Amino acid sequence: MTGGATTQPAAAQLVLARTKAELATARGALAAPVVLVPTMGALHSGHRTLLRAARALAGQAGAGQAAAGQAGQVVVSIFVNPLQFGPSEDLDRYPRTLDEDLAMCAAEGVSLVFAPSAAEMYPAGPPEVTVDPGPAGQLLEGQFRPGFFDGVLTVVLKLLHLARPDVVVFGQKDAQQLALVRRMVADMDLGIAVESVPIARDADGLATSSRNRYLAPAERAMALAIPRALHAGQARADVGSSAVLDAAWQVLRATPELTVDYLALADPGTFTPVLPGQGGAALLLTAARVGGTRLIDNVPVVLPAAEGRDR
Ligand code: PAF
Image 1 (cartoon, rainbow, N blue to C red):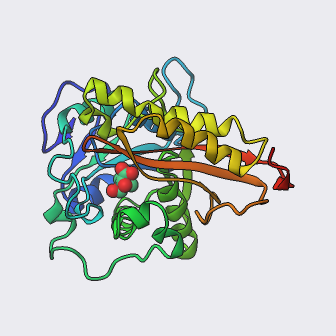
Image 2: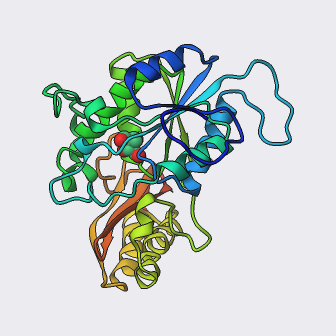
């Protein structure tokens, strides 16, 4: 690896950029298509899935595969963005594991990691001009975490300007974030392809998350009610929206240690609630806290067209 930090020997030549100037220099040497994976670090197996998808989108061969044609390169940003944390949230305790993150990036064939400080990203302090996420940004996560999506979209827009990717990759676990980034890219004519990767789950069903490492074993056992509830709801999709929500609530209520911020069946583009009788594709989403840890998860649901038939 080249750049400011030291880590274990890398499987591939990885450049670490700590400043915008270092990023600009390193970015100029990359082959297209350049694929960006924005992260807050504390990389886990779900991120590994994102990195592998990014590598495939860049046209690189996986291990043991022959490369087909000209390959592009993968850039990862690692930045715990203070703008998207509320005053009572976990900014200070959010895990920071740069050496391990760099080792994973090197092993997954990432070419460039941008890991700036907060002062590098926001030299004049919190920006006065930020991105307004619009109406979909006020619902669900936006309602429970005021200002969250302004912070997310502001940093994502800056990262897109700085890294100038052809493609940017996000996970589907943060479904509302993904939809808002897509909307921002379209509304602002950014000309970048937004790709998504399905939720990675551990063997017990819990969606992978950097925050899972906060969970004590007993808390993790309680947290498993989240994917169980979503899958119980999904299994009732052919009956209709009320049946989906009832089935999911039944599981959540059976675990009183969970504090549920919301359980919602929402339109996957606008995040407005699915109306009675509305058929088609929807997302069943929840956010719940166990102990001091807040987790989110979602599953896709396809509702019957003439839903008045709830049975
Ligand atoms: O999903 C995340 O990890 C963050 O919200 C992101 C997109 C890196 C912006 O800080």
